[in-house]
Image (cartoon, rainbow, N blue to C red; front, top):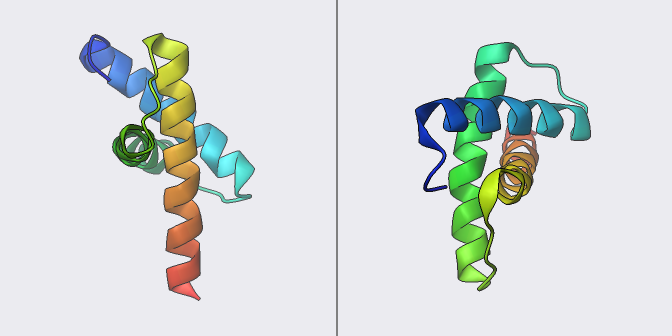
Length: 81
């Protein structure tokens, strides 16, 4: 996620966390969505690089972060059961 800067990380984290929350039918607060979104960006970036996929710009980063955030919430939900 290079090039986005601190504010970009916050925006991507909030949006990705919110989308992941809706996609997994969860109910979290703003701070949790931010943390899930930023963690999802790291997870999604790792998975994308491992698969040899390239992502660029705000939209590409948002997509990868959202996929990572959804994966994180699905795994956490499975562990809780």
